[in-house]
Image 1 (cartoon, rainbow, N blue to C red):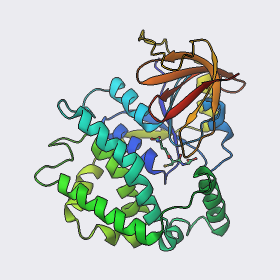
Image 2: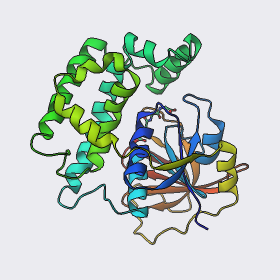
Image 3: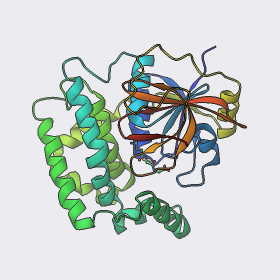
Length: 311
Ligand SMILES: N[C@@H](CCC(=O)N[C@@H](CS)C(=O)NCC(=O)O)C(=O)O
């Protein structure tokens, strides 16, 4: 029996929403593993070895970090409908990267201005709000978020650009959705869904609202809740999938079999340590053993991650 697709995430995570929508678009069945919004995350770290960003995808004893890689894995599992329509693959990936690295922080600085933060934390309480703010400030390395006025003006500019891209086509790269749409969708989803008090920022770009409705119709697909303990049990009872034979791209001069430390370039740089067992042109794979997760292969994209030998 094939191991289930498990997405470790929490409801208000925008990057998780990107993947949840893609799971829905591809009609995949998946297990929803709910994790904490802030550190500590002992069950996540048992699987990843240190990496703490949300979401992560688990299939048996294989753990995939970062949505750029997770989307490639889902595309491989279910190629139809595709996230990368022929002729716009480069454009799709480039818009997706722009959305993840530039649109997302601007949107979140806008969304978390005091009125928005109040709405997000209304049910969670003041202590949770304080703990969240401290956790994210530490993730940003103490760097302040963009101020609300700057975030507002920049978000509005970005929304106009997105709206321009929709002139004459139903989706950002043509008549079918692509990864570009799901990547632009998630920060906008946060504004419309989680901080409706601030969603009038969309009023000047009605095309975005119609596109948002089109994007929303796929939902999350077929999902059921799986506990973090069950997810660890699944990993412990499984073995990592055999690696595909791919060329070793040794740009760092680190031989396979070396003990390495790997972390994101920025925003959540908690490192993962283990044995480097693959370095292809697009991903690193690290093997590690944990008392609760067993032996796992943890996979990372190469773009956006930094590796060095452990000694
Ligand atoms: N480039 C990463 C970014 C992921 C990211 O920043 N996720 C946010 C949540 S939406 C996060 O990790 N926040 C801190 C946390 O969940 O611990 C990806 O595509 O997966």
